[in-house]
Length: 243
Ligand code: 2AL
Image (cartoon, rainbow, N blue to C red; front, side, top):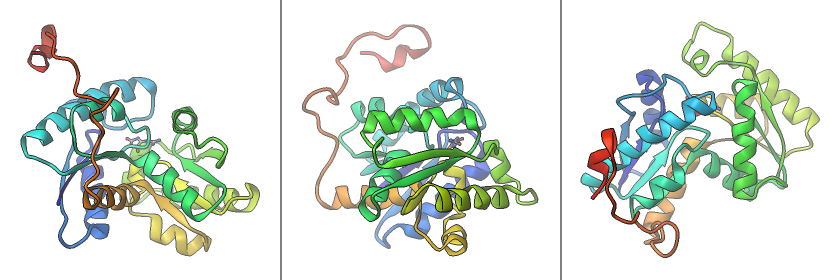
């Protein structure tokens, strides 16, 4: 089984970290391919970043289709381009936010999300509404950490994240925490130990869900709105996307 994990931002150290996490949880027979878009923002923490990164994700899916990938993971907590990505392939495509939300509801009745900058909280809130998880989520909390601060091992990112997770555990009446950034993928074990409660991180969640779907022979449905897009010409810089 070959799973293509796409980091939608263009920071190579984060792509490496996400790849290491995916490899750690993947089955022995699973081969992980990791990539990032050629163009786009170094981190995704605004609506603009999201919109541009979605195009990068779709370019990576198009590349993956030439390599016959069995599944894709979109490793940014806004799940940028998720539904459009599903239109481009029969393989399952899993976003790390939706994967985290799904697993959290299987082990708890209520969870909170702990994410990066407060301005990105709205992105997670929109996804909770869109996916129907609003009633399971008590609160989307932010740490006010810029995404790339998670790449700075000399900084205080871990401490800030731990303290916000402790507040979530002690104040929100929850059974689990979902980490709200792909760049937190390497912190799950330490947080789980320090908090003594389940902490779910979307990259590992998405890998295990992708493996399950592929093992069951389930792929993206081509009945209805996720069917391949109708062939039509595209203009300008997207001319090679059209037919
Ligand atoms: C993210 C993420 O997962 N990767 C990134 O660049 N931005 N989302 C977030 N809320 O911090």
